[in-house]
Image (tube, rainbow, N blue to C red; front, side):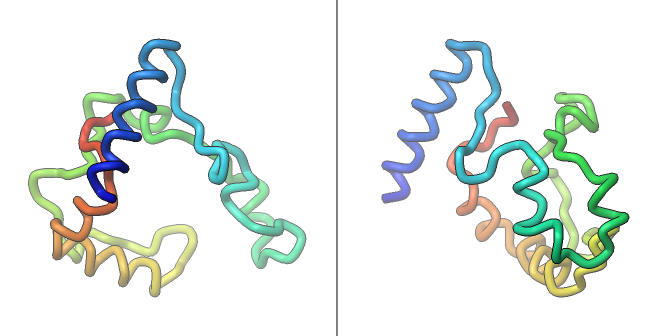
Length: 111
């Protein structure tokens, strides 16, 4: 099944490169709808109003993006603006176990 996913990822990458477009997941589109299930019932509405969807390359240069940095430490993870210690804790565990993180990604190149 993993091999099939990687083949599928290769085909998607090929199509996007051929058509000179960025990949867009239909179930997780690059829009505010992917940031919250329901903005009307979300706490801290003032924070959600200023948040916007951005690709990593829109925030930092492409050559600075690293999915698998050379050194990744559990104490590098911070809850940030969402202030979600459970999510930060899960990320810290994954940071300590790079093989788990590698299983999440079908491709290792930034596009």
